[in-house]
Length: 120
Image (cartoon, rainbow, N blue to C red; front, top):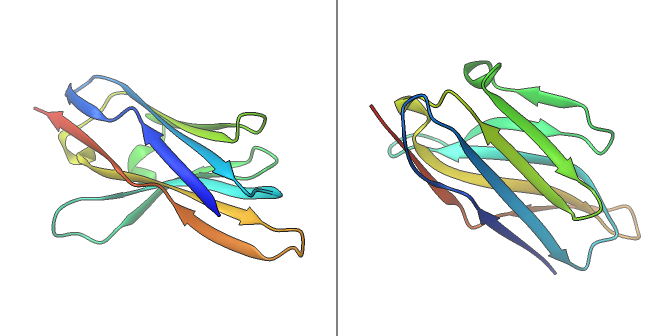
């Protein structure tokens, strides 16, 4: 079993910054993609950013140039640096990790979610 623990959410004024962290622990042979999603009230969960094991990054258009995803494979942790935050970034942010077992089967794991609130 794998556990994901998120931290770093909070309340910030528009234009401010926050850094989210998501640390994975447990029975982990290997990890492929790590990423972040978010969900606002009344909306579906939205993919925000992803990073492959080799470090290739992708972002949803609305956060390009403002958010940066990174990972520390030694610490099995993924980060999301969020700058120039806007009220529309307000959401619960979830990390997602694709874990690979010794039989090369992939499993999705989700963090518990952390609230990010951006005031105008």
